[in-house]
Length: 370
Image (cartoon, rainbow, N blue to C red):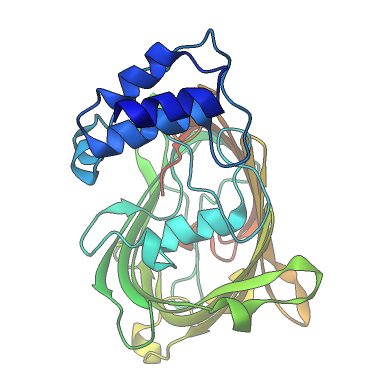
């Protein structure tokens, strides 16, 4: 070993002899090799300066070491990079493809197992929600409008809770999953104490969603766009009230989602399921709210913007347009609490208002988790 040390000093005179001796004294072979690498570099590399002594080289971290390290806060941790295409990560920006992958677990790397409760649609509290035209006398073909019973105010609060969980993984097609979801949306006359601050409307929507990832070869489209997934869904929506205010419908839907960098597009077609006329509280519901939905998403920097257009092709006078915008309250935690603004105009902000046109603006907070 001493001969080897002398040879090393002769071929690299700039290296401190004591440093070589330190490497030789290392009992562990892996550490000794790492020490030599630190002294002489890889093949063809310039030797280290003579004045620089090698630092003690720690062994490589094992899987057990990594698993025992304290985990960073999930709210502040950046989203995993989308290695298939260039782009930015949190907190500077989030690719829609990354968002789709994490939201719907489209790839094996993003699977989290079954029965893990996660957010679905935005969960928000809008304490300031102003409506241009309160529907004080709701009616439908089955239940004509009556006389106003409560003096509703145009300023109220809007609340939404929306959760989902995967119930089957790898069902049928490769990486396809079955999800169950539940959404509840309420309009609350919190600023109307004279009328005892009632809830003006609450809609309940359970649904089942079958999500099918699209393979990259099949989904690659011109212009940098990519078809990310298809969805098949079954949903029930009702307001839980008795006649004459009862409203409900059942539907199946098909949806496809595309992305390009920070932009995303989702197309959905709803098909209402037939029910006997004696049990149909709103036979003309789809005529007003529309059966087709087009949603455009833009994840620009720390902000998110979404626009949803609901319509019936060929009949443009009904339907609705909704725009949502969010921005983090704390820029260091973009996946945490966010400011939320929502603008709605048209028909069907609630089931009770499905045939009543209005414009509303809401301001509040949302929890951005997915």
